[in-house]
Structure formats: structure tokens, C-alpha cells
Length: 365
Picture 1 (tube, one colour):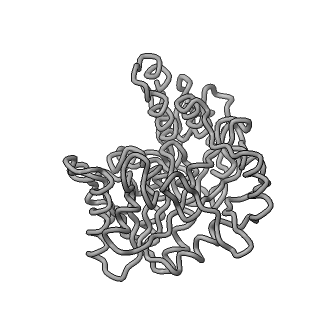
Picture 2: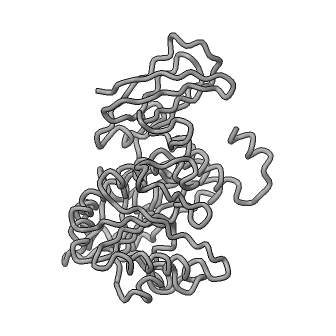
Picture 3: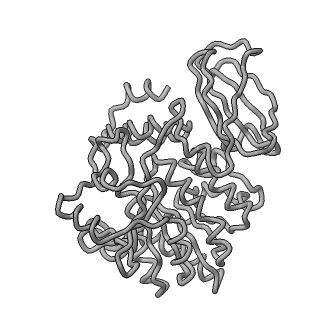
């Protein structure tokens, strides 16, 4: 269906749309391929001199540990994502518990619908639905929202709904209102792309992060995990990723433990996170099966249905008609045995080809 839509679509940004569509069906590999088609495989490359300088002056350090330590001295942490990249959501999710234990009790998400599209029941319902936000349909984004709610975060929307004013200004004002409503509390903000920039943006004046600092007087800790993101093929990757031997997400620190910043013109973020290149099992990234997720085989031998099929897993207790699935896989034929990534617990499984559907329950132990 995505490919049929692509063939008929004429808008210049059609591959950006298809990239997020593939992310929403938990197809990370194809989301990267589509994004590279949209961006013509552009990557952020450094000169040989810059690479040698970085490798000589900086060491790698675990990104989660470093951010958690730095966050102790801040009130606001802002981290960005690329809207097609599920791993960016997985990484932010990995920060939630550590930051919560340091007093970060509020999570602002650009991706949440706002205004007439606001999911006002989200914090009481405790799980996202397909109407919670367009990008939140991605099971990994849904998992981030679920974890935040289970941990105890107040999850709030801040997207601009006043289109008479610039988006950056309205986003910052909406976050400022939330800060004023929760004095002396700490905030984690998960935004898209350049909204994380401090200083001056090349097109927007100040981005959301810069405006928020201006309005609140608080200097946020800003984290960019987009600029050196992996591509669909290793040879397309930014050469800094290729030059470093990383087995985990890292930041680069100099001899004084100061992080390597991202700078572009008059804009910057306080640090950059670099993620290792993904490895795959049956076209699924290995990181899906980490952090408590088990490698679960779904047997369909007793089901008579025409292939290809989608297999969707839902947590028991959540509305299967509305909830964001916990995981999704696609099988092109009956002999496929690609696995689902599920934590221990009870799930409802939906198998569908669009015309016929079957439901059954499983217990993951």
C-alpha cells in the first residue's frame, strides 16, 4: 500500500512521508531507505583534518550515563529526533527512568496532537492510541509514551495551534505555560530536528529551544541525535560514524570532559549523541530485542489466510481497535518466521491481510 501510494504521489516530499509510514509499521530498514531517497543520501561529512582532530582530542563515553549526570544540574533537557527514525525514540525512552529519579517529572512531546486534536485522556488512560499523534503510531514511539506514563511522567503537548504566530514562538510559549503551572519541577522535551537548536537558526531566527531559554531565563541542556544518524547503507553513513568503533550510543568528550558540541552557523546544541550502526536479524534491528524485549516467535500454522499478512501485538487491557500496537511484523509467506519484540506479559495478537483477520492471545514469559 505504501509503494502504491508512492507510485501515484507527485509531491516533492513523498519519500519523507513514506519513510514515516514505514516507521509506523515497524519497518526500520525501509524507513531508512525511503529517507535516503528523500535526502539523496546526503550525510554530514567531516574533512580528513576535522576527523583526525576529533579522534586525537576526544574520547568516547556512554551517552546515557553522561546525559544522566549532566541533567542533575539542569531544569530542562531537550533532545531531538528525525521523524522517520525509531531508534531515536528508543534512545529517549532509555533516559526516562534515570531522569525521573532526578526529578524530571514532565515530558513534552512535539508529536502529540494539540488543540482540537489533543488526546486529553492520555495521562489517565496510560497508553497512546492511533489518534494521539501521527508519529506516535510507530510502536517504538508508543513504547516511549507507555513507559513515561508507567513511570509517572506528566506527558503534555506543546505543538503550535495558533498559526498566526511563528511555530517556534508558540511552541516555546506553550512549554513555558506548562513550566509556570509546575514550578520547581524538571522537564524533558522531545522535539523534531532543528527545534533543539539554541542561538540563531539560519531560517527561523531562534528555534524553539532558543525561544524557551529567552522566555524562561533557563539555559536548557540541548542534545542532538539527528545530525550523525545512520543511513540505509554503511557506505552512506557520516564518516565520523565510520571512523569511530562504537558498540553503544556515545558522546565525545575532550580532556576536560567537555562534550563535542554541534554547531551550525550561529546555532548549536550542547552535545551530540552518536549511535552505532544497526545490525539485523530477519531484517529487524537487533536493538528491538534488547532492554527487556524477548525474541518471540508467532506461530500461524493453524490459520488459513492469504499472504502477505500483518501481525500486530497489543497489550491485554488496551483497546485493540484504538491502541498503538506494541509491535508489528509483516510476513510475505507462511514459511516466514520473523520474530516479534515483546516484554513479559499477556498480549492480544491480530493477524490480518486487509480482508480477513484472526485474533488470539499469547503469554510471554
